Image 1: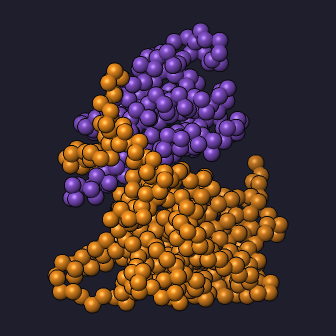
Image 2 (image 1 turned 90 degrees about the horizontal axis):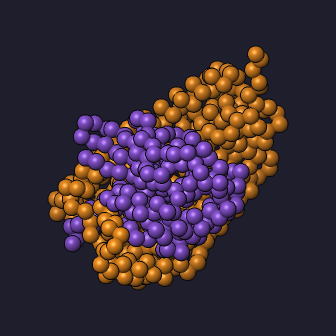
Amino acid sequence: MDYKIVFTGPPGAGKTTAIGAISDTAAVVTDVRNNDPDLAKASTTVGMDYALVALSDSDQLRLFGTPGQDRFDFMWHILCKDALGLVILIDNSRPDPLADLSQFVDALVEDNEGLACVVGVGRSEQHPHPDLEAHGEVLSRLGRVVPVLAVDVRQRDDVLTLLDLVLAQVQARLAFAEIDSPAT
Amino acid sequence: MPQEPESEPSRAPQSLSLHGVGLAPGEARLLELYARVASRDAAVRVLWRVVEGLPADVVLQSAEVAGATTGAKAVVRVGGSATVGRGALRLPRPFDFDDLSGLLAPLGEQLLDEGASGEPSFEDTARDAADVTPVFESTRTMPMNLGAAAQGTGSSTAAAPPSAAEAARARIEKLERELERRRQAAIERQLRESGREDQAAAGQAAPPAPVVQAEERRAGRKDDRSPQSPRAAAGPKAEAHPHESYRLKRWPPGELLALQPNYRRLAAFLGAHFLSTESLSRASGVDLPVCFAFIELLRSRAMLEVRSPDGAGAATKGAQQRQAASAERAAVPAQAGKGVVVQMSSATSPPAPERAAATGGFIQRLRRRFGLG
């Protein structure tokens, strides 16, 4: 069976790094040299990142990373189609992290009722504001309870925690369906 | 290269704090023991001594050691052995705080006697609010001298007193293995008990109801509730309403989730859907008493929406808004123009059973692969 989890977020949030932290193989990246003076990085993703976690010949988890720039937002929707879950990575060092979060939540989460979703806030140690509570407020405006936690995507355990929370939400949905099905 | 000293025992504060959460004054269903000691090594020894001395009917929830060079903390959480039968959750053994000396026997009475300066202080509070289940909490904090434990003396069970980090790590790993073994044993015991109860119930023979269950049934019926009864005074609770389900109103603060290693995962479950305590335990693989304690904790902080089977008294304003929003979205033709189709997108249309089973199996394999519980 094939399932996929999508990593999204603004440029520089660490999507490519996060995928690389848990994938079996080197991620296929579509990075090009960065010409955007607003981005302090040498290269940036313009297509998508892709990597695989193979559990067996027939079981695999596909990991996709979206390009961060909003001019590629059509890609976000394509990649989220049939996704098992969505990981939104936010870079707290950017000028307006809450606006970044709103943008991705509005674009993806609100349209995908029930899609398992988790928010990882990066660089929050050096940039503690806005705090996690403020990020949570953005999400609660939508009436969604989405896990929000500080992460360092260079740490594999942090990325696994994000994955764990996505899987937990899917399992909750399965448990709910199991409970409901006899009555329906 | 010389090794840095692991700790400075003489400077670190040493205290023992016991925190209990229960449903009525005088009883505790979950106990947390915090021993603040001089070093990580000492904390490991304290854990060993507590764990080894636990009575057979006490389920160990978790045991952790935190901290390092400036003093360490040993945290042990225990609860009553839980049984599940026909959807009813009960924790048959409440703990009176006076039982604590027994619970702490492995630590040694002398530790309490030697270290306590005067009488321990007590702070009992019964929380009560209109929309919050009253939960009794009691905390005892007492300064104590854990010198004997910290130095490895006066204990037949303590290991040799190594100071190197390697030895401490080895001991922690051994402890973790032992904890896992005990946890598995507790789960198996619960499953066996659950199976026996289910078999009895299937026999239609109306077995005599245990006293605890009968009391709970009475407590669940408002008309019969005696205002003098501690149970009745405790008000509606998960135990008396095993068919209630819960959902988070908002993501809990980090410090609350840090209380127990499984709390964050449990919160993710409860954030996604309404689940009963038992369903939560089954779906998450986390022991029932831990789930019970977590739900009680969230209820005490008014962070849960509660839904009863008949829908009575369930929907809070937030829930109503969410339901309305869901209904609105469901009424809109799906995602025209954006082409987004989410495979498992709607709580109201559960996935086909085969697909759900396959997805569940896949997730289990994925969890095993990454060591995610």
